[in-house]
Length: 121
Image 1 (cartoon, rainbow, N blue to C red):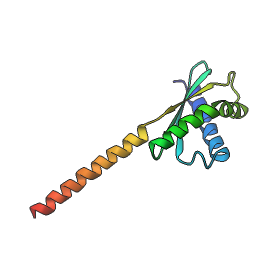
Image 2: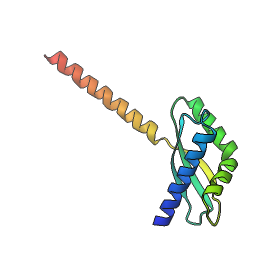
Image 3: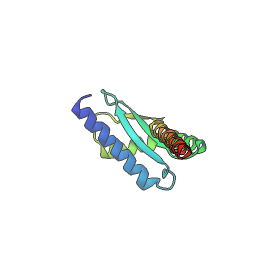
Image 4: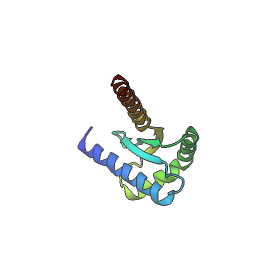
């Protein structure tokens, strides 16, 4: 990835996150924009988001992003001047949830090891 494209990704990411946190603060409190990947031709962008909470909140986030994608694109295009305003495609990022699950498993293993040490003494 070129340096220019990396800067565009970061700029679009920042603008989307800022817009959501100011305009839709109450709706998006459990959602985080984790990354943006703008295509080389600047016509499409994949926006990854993560959801903290239940599966119902994830469905709510998906519906929200499907409904508001055009509005978000319009707002981003006001602040990020590019040859083309990229079409935004929102996808769920499971990385944070996987990381949390790994931490839970490690905690369980640590607790089992400590329990065994206490039983041995």
